[in-house]
Length: 177
Image 1 (spheres, rainbow, N blue to C red):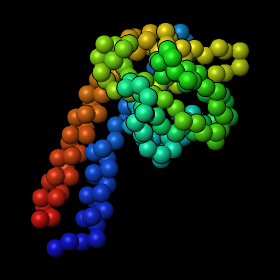
Image 2: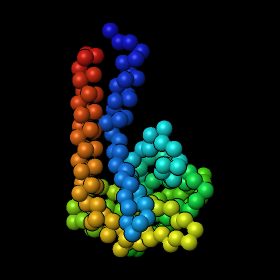
Image 3: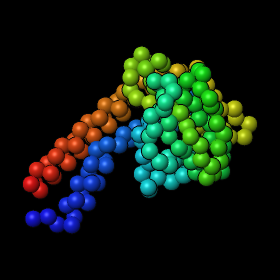
Image 4: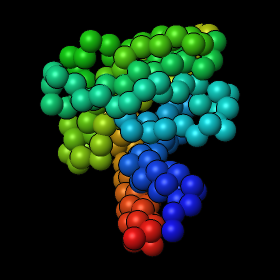
């Protein structure tokens, strides 16, 4: 017998199973950066002071180069945000955004920098007064290489969580039938 809660539970489990949650905060040259995957969803309880951006809308596969994906992004702080994607010929290797400003951001694949496909990511940092933030392809590559193990572990952990969530959805479906 179906209760009203069961479809909601299954929908929630399925949505959770399909979202990659890779977001790493790393330090490079004494500056804080975030490596963020294209499918990442920031939890509602994350404060703007913790992460200065959020995504608006879904992951969109680009029509251009094979190595890109797009996502609408919004700044959540009054401080400028600089974004890099590792693509040397990108339309926008750097962007400065403030609070509530939105832009379509291209994500780059880790395949070129790491010779390992861990997904599509951007590099985000705050551009504080007197501090020239670097998000160019060279910095992107340096940060990916320096944090390869952490990134690989985070992606593996996310894949494991996603697999467990898919199994939960299948189990919930089985119990309903």
